[in-house]
Length: 329
Image (cartoon, rainbow, N blue to C red; front, side, top):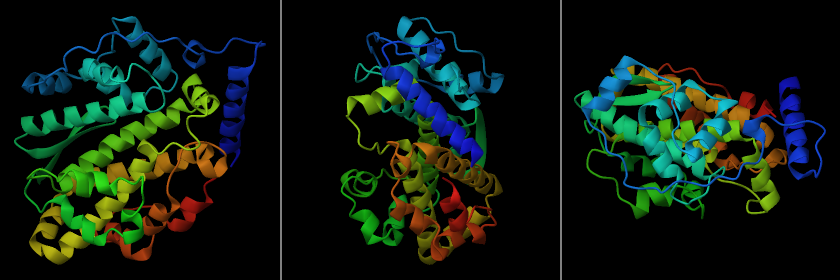
């Protein structure tokens, strides 16, 4: 509780400084308002097996070349992480390609850039590992023992996603299950890839909450609430559980294949624990507490209902309880 109070006080202080005409002290560079002039987007970078070799050799500090790259580095520097550093080190040009799409860096565009680049690196890593689903998380590659495309399409999860969640006008269900039908081979390994990418974006959204980008988002009046990677993390936690419920009924052999893939299960555990952590860390900045980050409580209620969260229990995966999640303020 004390830590959350400190976060709220810190946020209030930053917001006050961002609108004050005179400051009694100078904020660190990464927390000050910056005028970003973004470079030309150019051609989208492409990658091959050399990227996998680069990752195997380990992370090196990203050396920005252009002014906008230096500004991005300053923004994330105060709460940098192995994941952000790794993505910048290995495919920084792709991160910046995504960041330059809208010619603006804000709480929406920057996490989106890291999210999308996470997909790029996962795709190439999986290809390098003979289609064994491979994920870039916490700055390193995790090769699993589940082949991409070896189990049913993730669309089978739809039957277990509650109707009230499907009908949400701004929800992700229409995007992932209706408007764009998944390509052949897009199975649970792809749902986990999405959870991995949303989690990366969510961690950055939380980190940005004490920078000028968050303060400017509030001052602009553009967002009464922002439904971004944090909310997306919760959505894909639900889709994961829904898939497990459905595949156990429809394809018991596939369910056993998942259950008997310890490296894949270990990564699901890794992501789930981190996802619960980021949802808790986001609480001080959530709409329910006067912030702008939105997470649908209906989604959380379904996730932590007995018939859904028990899917993790069946696989022996620890998790917090519904009560523990609600107690975090």
